[in-house]
Length: 183
Image 1: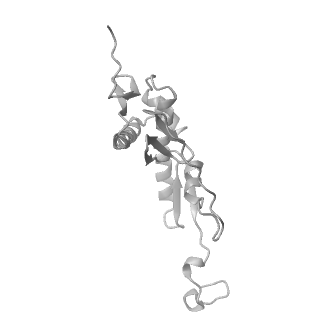
Image 2 (image 1 turned 180 degrees about the vertical axis):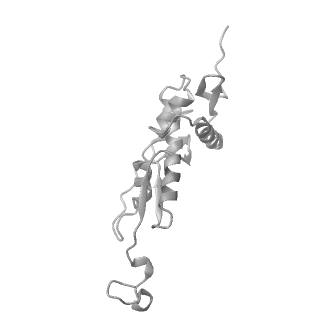
Image 3 (image 1 turned 45 degrees about the vertical axis):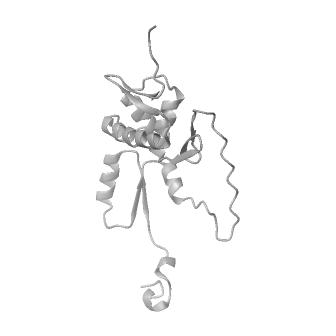
């Protein structure tokens, strides 16, 4: 029924053009997202996101209003030979002339690891850097994310990977040119 008491199906209005309610939940905690989903089940369509950056990516229309000119995308700067380049604005990683899209979580993890590539990062530090204020019991979250990121780095042909340091954490390394200690 529409506000004037008529049936929308009979009024000739396209259902996709009618307004509707949407509940948006923003929380980095998977447990809290699950709890909210259960509480709001059946109330309205529900969109759950980890943070405002993820929400912006989902609701921002890159094409702009219909008929509006699309601003030109600046050409990517050529990467120095053998350099892995992370474009945070476009959420991509580039190696030479190859590029792959990254999720927000992959981008944040890779950005963290490349900030200090020699450093070994603990799982807790990485979890905090990527999931921010979420509980730091997410070793499995980090491992799952690392697995996907390793695959993408391998597909790029970088030679760069994320190495586990037993009992400590993770670090970025180049397995084609490993660093050798000693004489």
